[in-house]
Amino acid sequence: MSSKRKITVAYGDGIGPEIMKATLAILEAAGAQLEYDVIEIGEQVYLKGISSGMEPNAFESLRETKIFLKAPITTPQGGGFKSLNVTTRTSFGLYANVRPCKSFSPFIQTHFPETDLVIIRENEEDLYAGIEHRQTQEVCQSLKLISKPGSEKIIRYAFEYAKKYGRKKVTCMTKDNIMKIADGLFHRTFDEIAKEYPNINVDHKIIDIGTALIADRPETFDVIVTLNLYGDIISDVAAQVTGSVGLGGSANVGEEVAMFEAIHGSAPDITGMGIANPSGLLNGAIMMLVHIGQPEIAEKISNAWMKTLEDGIHTGDIYQEGLSTKKAGTEEFANAVIERLGQVPSTMVPASFDKDTTPMNVFVSPVVKAKKELIGVDVFVDWDEPGRNPQVLGEKLRQANSDGLQLTLITNRGIKVFPDGMRESFCTDHWRCRFQTPEQSTISHGQIRELLKQVEELGFDFIKTENLYSFDGVRGYSLAQGE
Image 1 (tube, one colour):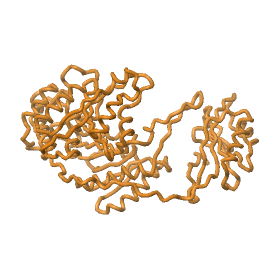
Image 2: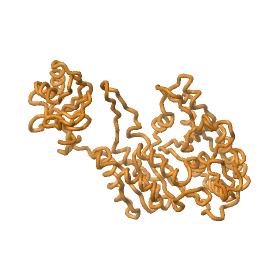
Image 3: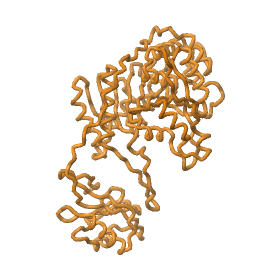
Image 4: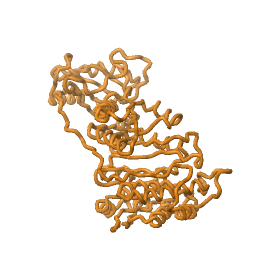
């Protein structure tokens, strides 16, 4: 390698500077061909009044280098501060979060010594879009957005990853028994793409039992692909059952930019004590080296790190009486890894990373457009009359009729309460009122505007509307519980 690759580096907050210093010392000792553009992110930037936690020059650095090695940060408590990770992922299109979770038994204590799985999580959509509203005195909403292109990209990435790294099975995890439309889209897309990879085994798990199986039998999984929130949760579960969240590194990969980091936080309680484990950030840096075409250096560091573990030199978080030989601080642990550069582990399998630099074939198929027809509207109202009797609300709203567009049902927190609701149902001040024609025929936006005018004239505060569509004649909205 004749020229150095420039990367963006952020030392972060809390233990971030300590573990970044240790990580960079190992990279340099191993001969990584890197030069650094150091940026400031995190708490001090937030406190300057920059809500994203990143100054404009930091974004420019990432546009130039396209590689970000990031230490953990601290987000100040209180409202108004955006998640820097979410901002970076969405701003630069880092759609794939990749978290390897591997056991290093017996040197790292675990009940699951055979575990070697990778969790690939969608990184831009879902509830992490952060679209939330308080709509009444009692009710807030958070919108879950799942797209066909977003689902296809991450699922195809998972299959391409499995193909590239010789993995045998890809498991999809959703909650489509409840969220039949949103999670159902992800599951259907998975089934469609799986047909293109006949040599890879596939299965699907509902996320609750899937999470339980990760906690109980993680060695049965190979590659898992899932939605944003579920992936965030299960990747920490998987990291913990394999030994320690403190060991895990992760990659956030987009079409142009990629970010590499530890999966743990800034640990302000041990800041400055010199005892933090740099392994998580180091493992993130190893993933970075593979990504930028320096796999030989990545192998050298990974093997030295495993040899250090085998020799019993452990930081306090993974120290085991009777197995560990030395409790090392951050700098001491890094020096031990450096001393072992060029050595390979004798018990654990030496690292071997893919040398093929051919990009993975991740693409989005053209959308086949369905015939979309407007067939109704859900009008959400804030109504809090004494007793909160759905019958009273329903009889009043039945007076609204826009050219046949009339009230068909009312729900409260998704439960049908009118007509013929259960008197035991608990009701808040937030009501979904569905209006359709008796034949569920197509309607116009003009009919909806006239309907809302009538609802307002009846004295109701409508706080939101959702249009009801069919696509090629298939209902594109959920039924109410009890409907």
